[in-house]
Length: 521
Ligand SMILES: [Zn+2]
Image (tube, rainbow, N blue to C red; front, side):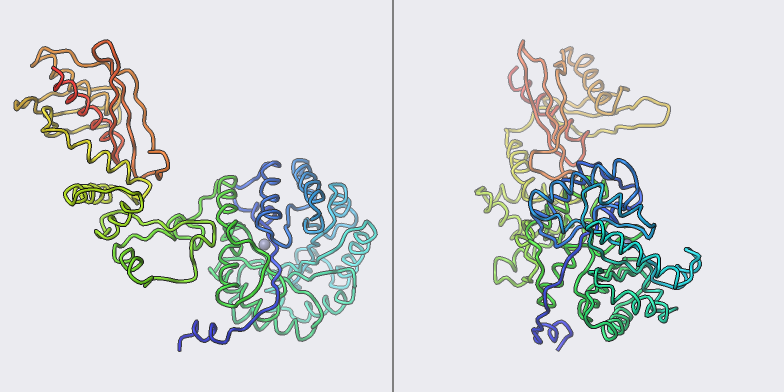
């Protein structure tokens, strides 16, 4: 029996795990990320109201006036919905300064940053443990007097346990009896732990201080943030710190969606999180932060519910052969069947059927062929692209084209204008032409124009409008739609081309136009 089976079969039930989201504080420390105050409010709103995390850490005290404004807005909002006690601000052991800053914003909770390793205490702070403990107590007392509740971070706790456990115990012995400290938050600040160490150190802490509420705060430097979070919970941590999309300094923190899925599926733990909001919050933070989520990021990545190989779609229709508990709808998403060079016939047929499109076997074959071609050129084509592909393919059903593109080369070189060399067949006769232009497509059209004028002595419709877009509902990247409007016979003629390549799409639209013109002669 494999490990996963053993865990599942043991059906262990964990108590409630508190989730604290630090996207707006630790997450914002991601290189290049800075949220505007109203963006912070929108994220906080969604976290508290829709995702329903237990607590959010929204800022570091004393950072800036802009930050103050954001914290004020969040506190005002949280107060309105009765959740002000869930909003936390990181503060420092600095006498009255941080506490006053937070109180001034209307905040009710300070997450006080104390030193969790002897090295940080003596080298960085240049204090003796006794002095540091006295300073912490003073700040805690002041916070309490101002009506703030206090959680205490032991910064660099992981190294503290490794190199100076006596220091950690000295600190805890002195502070665990301070009744106004609600939680002790144990961070792996430098992301150096592995799950076995997390288990060992947490067990030591919990054995010594059985009544204390400990949070664990992971960093992902060894790609172990999620595993370490679980190890902490298994060893008695009552709360976990996460961020949306795993944002955070260096390699970031534990991603909320992954932590949630694994807590629930692998360990049958309870949290307050509303799972079908996880994709929404991921997209919101992705947009505001400008940090793209990797396409293969579990739960929230673009491709994780897109099945590419035809055999899977086949298995899905047959007997749910590829089933697991990570169902996309659970997280507010939908399964997609990618259409590409690996799509089997079953895959494409299933997609056509879902769209209610009935095609003849011959048409299906051509659609499949077209998808394979597109798949060879670029990324993933999905069901949403399918209607456009079908209409593109079927429009080619027009009787034998009178104007055909035989071959072409377009070129761009530094310091030179783009050029085009083309060979076309018009009513059975082949012609060559070349031209330079302001862009590749412009050069292409000029070469065509040259052929029409020189060999056929005919005018060529004037371009009125040129529009490039991604088909509505379709994916970025996979397909480009070009709609070109031409002046023709005192009116306008509009044609459309679809391709993975923008110039190709425009060329297709142009040939559609030329064939319409040719058959109207
Ligand atoms: Zn951190």
